[in-house]
Image (tube, rainbow, N blue to C red; front, top):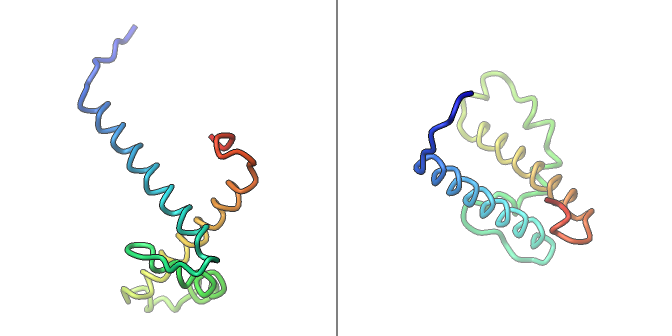
Length: 104
């Protein structure tokens, strides 16, 4: 039988990581839910104000010319489009639950 040594530093790091992940997730879902109300996203989520453009221009983002991937703005647009699609999908999945606690 292998006994794992208890390491309080690694446990603390894991708890901090999970807390930060939960905080970011809540912020993203709040931002997505407020898009239709006219509130403009701020800070690191300002790209979500262009949600419709990011989702509609999926072909431009997915299939740029190979040399375009060397341009930082193309890479950034691809990441923003992916993040926007993932946030919308997550928000839609969460909206299926009548009680937010059911989604756990």
